[in-house]
Amino acid sequence: MSTPGAWTEDRIRALREKEDLPFVRADASGIVQEINDRFQAVYGWTEAALIGQSLGLILPPSFRDSHHAGFARFQLTEVSKVLNHPLKLVTFCSDGHAIESEHFIVAEKHSDGSWSFAATLRPLTESS
Amino acid sequence: MNSSASSSSSSRDSELIAQLRQSLGMLQVAFDAASEAMVIVDLDRRIHWANQASAELFVGGVPIQLVNQTLADVLKLRPLDAHAKAALQLLDPQLPLPRTSGESRCQVLSPNGDESQVQLLRWRPVELIQSPFLLVSFRDLSPEERALVQQQRFMTDLTHELRTPLAIVSGNLQRMARLSDLPQAVSSRLTMAREEMARIQKLLGHLSLLTRLEVDAEVVSCGDHLLAPLLQRWHHASQELVPNLMLQGLERADHQVVQADPRALMLALDQLLDNACQHADPSMPIELSLAGEDGLGHCILEFSSQSLDPPVSSEDLERWSSPFFRGKPERDGDKVEGPGLGLALARELVRGCGGILSLHQQPSLPGTRTIVRLLLKLRASNAPGAVVAAVRTDPA
Image 1 (cartoon, rainbow over the protein chains, first blue to last red):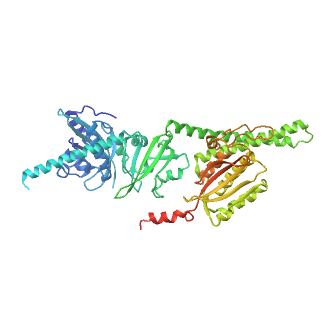
Image 2 (tube, each protein chain N blue to C red):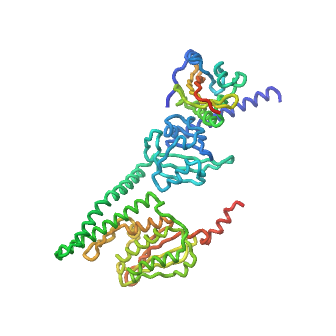
Image 3 (cartoon, each protein chain N blue to C red):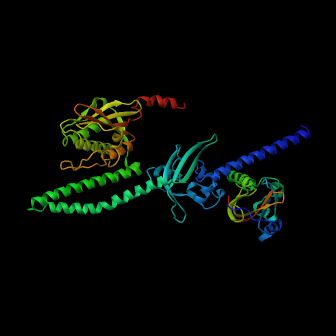
């Protein structure tokens, strides 16, 4: 198991601006805090629809159990194997389409001990 | 509801969600801590839940990469035992998902063809209210299980390798025996060598079959068969060689149908007869009798013979059906047969038919009566309790 690297606000900002990729950021509870324009363009989600909602919304329903369990597990152990390397997953669009995307997920630990999570998504093939 | 009550309710909800999240996290920690690879699949064989060990075994990644894939997408199996068909049923979408638990030894093949260590594959239905699921798990074999697999492979390879040279030696001995004008001493040694060779070949055949029975129960192919004609046929064929062989109690077998493989049953009876001929008093009858039913869905066959020897201890009697168990020295000038595999083979053949073989002795003047008891499964409609059980379990 790998522990998350020391991601800082600056590095996450750099990630956000990297290659103009879709970007999403969530708080320690997995609630979406931020998406960029590219994310909205590719996956169809608007800020109004997604900000304040669970990250699970951008995963197909069948993946949500595993996502929630993995998220809850991280909160107890602060150990994860999904961080800091490309991971091919399916992303759920606002219209119900699924797009296979390469996720690069990072975690940032704040001074108060809480975590936030950010990811860039590189769309691969599109499927329904 | 005023704002204070609403705020309190929202706080309780948040607390409850935090608790649920913690419980879920704990469950996942426990699931991932297991060394067994575990997945839960639905009726379409799609993976709903996977633990870290399964992700490492199947894709070398993380559990979420397995979700929504079918077992066949992520897994190729090489089953190694008798339950191959059932194990492969897990992967074949044309077949219904198993509704009962099972297990099989197998190897997991990676996409590039690498084989895993031999694994114990287990599956168990998980009946949820919404729909049935199946828990599928893999674990490494224990050292004892690995040793058994190696031993069985060794025996299979050994018997295979020995067949050809033995056939060549046997053929040459036969050709030599056809030569005329051999000196008496040479001829008698040749006869002895041919008898020993026949014994080795018989032992090898038994050993090979015994090993196959241990690793592949499908060597025995059971069906429903009328018992009486089977026993009559065997008795008729055997009595030519063993005139003191009696068949008793056949009137009880009228229309009785057993679940058995006729070849396996005949071969088991042959072993018992060989054994009786070797050890029993030749002046006394050897009896095969139908002794009734046990009330648990079996008919009872008893194969009995009498010897002048005293009874053996119950421990020794138990070990008679172990391979090569040597109860007492038998190899002398008259008795060339040593301890063999006959009873062990008979036991495995009967077990392969779903039956049970046990040994019993009782004092009988003069000497001891040895009884080999065979419990053979009756077809369900024959068994007295079967109809009752069917009615009780019928949900309608």
